Image 1: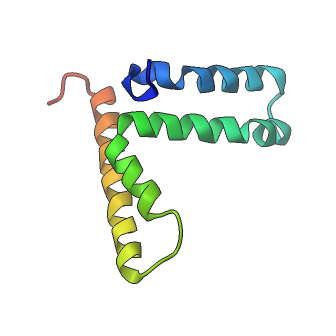
Image 2: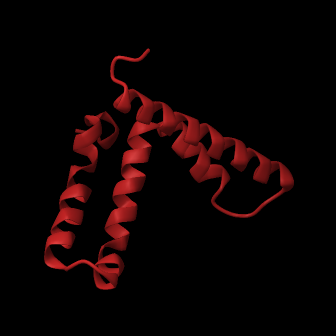
Length: 99
């Protein structure tokens, strides 16, 4: 099944399992932070890309490098849109009956 057609959580399961394995293998502290950092970041990016795919892609494309003041402004707008999208998902999760 193509990656974009997978259910939201299934898409990130492999990264989540790898991160949990990393946490089991390495005790708390700086060693764990260093060893598991790439998995933690990968899982976070995966979850964000599933929750807000259009906003995530806009941030990735507009904020990847420096550029003109217009591009920096567009990057800031994209980051704000992503933040609003993620906040709306958090609000839905914390208040499942709210509309």
